Structures are given as structure tokens and as C-alpha cells.
Image (cartoon, rainbow, N blue to C red; front, top):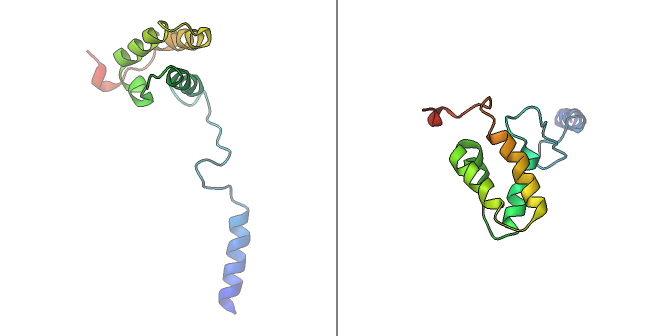
Length: 105
């Protein structure tokens, strides 16, 4: 009987906590990161629509790779992709943005 009481109170306590599932209503804070992640996500999806796979980790960690992918996006006749690439280019071209330690000259 004591086990039932403990389990009952634990389940009531757990019901008040937000879900720990990664996909449950997660809204990333755009200001918390150092890259506009929604814009980067849109870019990778638009590139995939043209049969081009873009590695988001490499976009964030290798500026040359990022610039290459952004330049490549301008070779397609897709106005939306060009606009997204131009907005991302403004971010990656900003010298004030942090550069990963391994890329510093």
C-alpha cells in the first residue's frame, strides 16, 4: 500500500513537468545561437530540393564550405533559394562573427 502512495504522488509530480521528448514543442531561441538556425534549415531544405546535400555542421564549422555552398545556391534559377542564400551570406561574411578555433589563421 505504501508503494501505491509513493507511485501516485510521483505520477502527479511528473504530470506537472514539461515533456522531455526532443520533438515536443521545442522552439529554439534565435538569439541564443550564433547562426540563424531556421534560416540555415530553410537553406538546407531548399538545396535538397535541387538534389544537393548540405551538411549543417560543416556550414557552422567551416567557413569555406559555407561560402562554397552559398555561392553554389546562386547557380540555380530559384529566387527563394537565392534570397535565403543572400541572407545567410550576410551572416557568414560578417568578420565580427565568431570563428571556430580550428579555423583561425
